[in-house]
Length: 518
Length: 104
Image: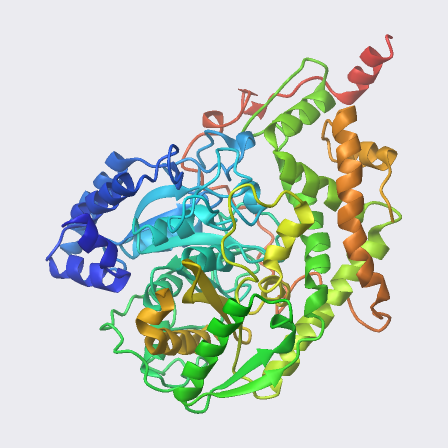
């Protein structure tokens, strides 16, 4: 298979061809690695991957081929190459979180999300570059150098899941896993012109995701198309006893939403459209949605400020027009506390990070720097040399807002305002709005090195961070280009209503067609 | 609230981070600038609002209070910086450090 053909295949199409025996899993692995070499995924060019092992991936493909001989074992992602963000624990390949403090560390256990991918026939082809410990919005904070945007190598791919977004955008894999704490899947998806999904908090197990801010962290999916992302999320979603915050809410077949039908009754186990547990039910490729009749789309004024780039605003309006033409009603709404989200996030996330990252102290795993002056000196030397500037800054910020005298003024206050932000979303959805539409980011991808002020970088998350604070699902899909760089549109729905989110996304993607990348 | 250099050195000590003098000055400015943006929260009336520690809708479920052995695919020795007889080996404890530092 030629590299060019490979880059056009969706996950469902690959899995279907592999199951039918038209193409072998090892051919898919080979095509992915050939594409990575062709596009320059290595550290001297795009710097997408931190770790790959082509031989191990090829061997995994051989094992899958044997599995496929058993007709009862047809994984819905059979033979699909998948890239994994390097903060998700994997067997066989290192898990470094883009940090020197974990350089060379190979996890002794695997994340549930990866186990479910493998169980469904996916082939792991590499671990992707990221901002150190997922702290950043450009992938420039990686200890192993920045990733470059495949659409313009002078620009960042976004972050922190920049390597995963770039892998999908470059056609190396149709699907990748990333993680979100404040927008780290959706923002790079927007910058790279791919689809990025942050599920409801609790929808996907966090077991094996290296903790940054535990009340916000979620594993997410990046795909070339809405269908790739839907298939990916379907595979990894669902209850996991290894994560006490994972939900037992039944997982619908998201691909059915492409038919334009309302969400089936997720609480009725007899509903055919529901897959309880992880038994895969292969479906034919969705024919494309034709209607959004009865769907109410909310357009929040706080996400369309006067200062918004006029070209991005125009693309959002075009998307809203397309949705109207498919039968949706667009309603002006308000999420009045959204402007407070960045201050709230940058108190809560560093506070949780300062606690979570205390485990990196040179005792049990990772880097140890011992100046020979006792235990406390070893801690300080290890952490100072192991953490980069942004991680150090956030750990100190988090320690400060949790310290005596400041806890109530900062941390407790931010927790209360988080409640208000969540209430805003609940009120809007209770008023009859089915989905909210906004720009994903206020700008397109910016040049590497262009932003040096930490708070200016934090503002990249201004439209995404509210969904993390409220715990609702959200996704970004390509809606056009400005000055040749991709622009993302964001769809947000109520807790555990990813089905409606995908329904709107399938419809908008179909309505925009090639315009989504123009 | 502006952060002072002493604050930075204090929280660096709490966070077990070594911060030298020049970096402490930089961090003092950076943290003060970031925290200045947080002041807007003080204007929000939250007197009757409960704090959200998370977004779980059903609370944290409990499991039987029984120990479960970790399911590890590789031995601790494969990733631990230093081990002996099944224990992680660390440098001397703080009490000894303090004695050494004071010249005792």
